[in-house]
Length: 534
Image (cartoon, helix red, strand yellow):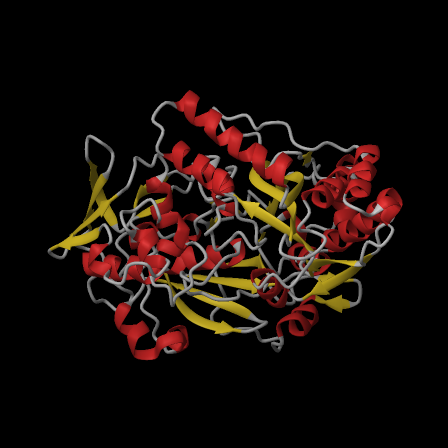
């Protein structure tokens, strides 16, 4: 870190960092090769517990799955599994675990470690919100929901130390992508069983990925250190990486501009009032992204249990005004939930801006002109100014067009996520970044038994359509089924209100940092990123 090298007016960079990081001007004895602002303080580094993109970036550096994301394309490639065989009917995957795969503490990683990690995800007591992604496996759903008690009956098995077998219910085109997700990385059984929920606090933490956890200082930094026992350690490009928590866009930009940090992920950490100017700079990199900003509605609460109320709220929002007045980064207005960048899929029409129709629907629901409509609460987190600005604009629109009174509730990120998971809200700000390049990565979120649903909405027709689609080999027929499901979600039932499709923005100087490749998922494995020689 280049402490003291530059001055901002009369305030030295060293002083800025001392205030932000709580460090003296001497800094750390061993400077990091890379310093990255990663977003909010991680809620957890346990693969089974994480839900946010910022948490997932750290976890993918520490723990690896059967496959991993390619640093250039973000497509799945061999990870802890060196290879695999897929049966002719597409139902059985047999993975060969690398004989050289080892924990950062030098013990070998075996197929039994993979089996333990995946069964742990499906344990009802684990309550992993991503467990539903494994329901394509035989008996996984039954075990995760408590209807089956014997884990041996799940379609997961091992043969010796290096063969891991998975039996699927139906062909799943994106299964190898699932294997690369941070939630399904291989975790250390012995450490977890010895320390339970404190296993990440007892050093050394056995890591299966390219880096090990050197230290984690809350509200300061996570330091990662190159794992010499990683099977591909020769291609890990940095020895030490510091990941800083930061939710303030002005702070992030100031630290970057003064050379204190090398990379800032996420558009929310670019000051919205400067985005128009910043995107013209060569070190600010914009890209189309597989992500949607939307509103969740708690359908278990009155009056949001009435679909006409939900439709009215959706049709009263001028989304064009939001992207032109507030976000201003090239975002696309969204009436659909699935971003329009996936090949071979076109979303059905959603609910467009129509305030007159919105007022009619609200009157039909028994609230003409907003009369007798109880004050509603809109919840959002404190990870960016745009969330607050959008909340204020929504309050104005709903008040102006529908006569609805809205109270705003701003929460710290961890509290917000917990309140959302417990459905302690009326309406709340949400976003979803696709985990793989298929419409299912968006639509499966709102299955009745999905841990990521968080709206209370359950629709058997929707569930059936997705199950049929995921077992349909004909791509044309599959798209029809997926479109029918999405139409229920965004037009008929409306437990969510899509606002816009994200436009990604990351900032780093490409003449100083290498190994970052643009892709729609914003996947940038830390193992490939490095400082360029000047």
